[in-house]
Image (cartoon, rainbow, N blue to C red; front, side):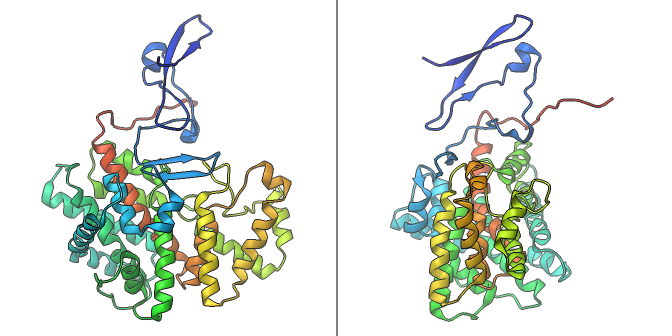
Length: 416
């Protein structure tokens, strides 16, 4: 029997609200008829208690520190599958067998060529431009190409459009990096894996084979861990734009713009800046006290998460990857030493423990990319590279969901 909640208003009106239950997770109060029956809206700034859609893609249990793609634990996917298998899983709902994986790789190869128009867009930017501003424009340019071919006909059945975005974004991000560093672009080598290919398009032959393999393995984990994360701000932006009937590429542009925000995709860059600031000071305890002072503007970046009230499961995986990368490089990373010192204090200090401020995924991903010599202004574009898979998958689900309506939040009016 379906459960219901009884809402009793001060005027005596009583209404029953259905409680929806997903496969797992908390029950969801169905309030879609609330305004029609009561004349009332709900007030939920930031949508902290609001489910905006139903989805079969990603599940998070923030209290238990659980993250799953299509029912598969993130730890299993990161340790036992490469990123292209995870892309296939998100798009198709199941992990590929060997034959399916082989055909999928051929499709990625076929759709990976970046249009000349997009290449010219990158070259038109000044070398001083932020990489994210260029990436937004690249997706906007792809949306223009889509519109030239298809007009307003948004094809939500043909996965090739989405796969082409996923296939082209590594080359686009690598071109952006090389453009702002005044270097010639490097063509894709489709004999390499997705992550190896990206690394080569970024840095050419700067690393020997052992380092290339080590770095590509670490990047593969970073891509997998960042591929999707339920209805975060950038994914919600993609769905919101898509709900108006906009094309996939136009919606992806909105996702990149949202991800650029320092409290979303820019957090891993902020972690590195913070660690460097602490390194210059040489006093970890001083910064711990600053973080605990509500009147001090300093924030301890890389700790705490909007959803996770436990240790971010992605952070555990990247902590091990971080140790592996720096261990095999035989580097004594002062930034990693400071990071471990902060983590050790935060996991024992009552202030952080009571507030459940555990290390999150940004805490270690920045250190890994820093060790690979990726500059911090490229951290967020690389995050966007990984998250493109999630955005694409979420857009297709949204476009094919019969309950999708154009998003139209209401407000609590407090003006004159």
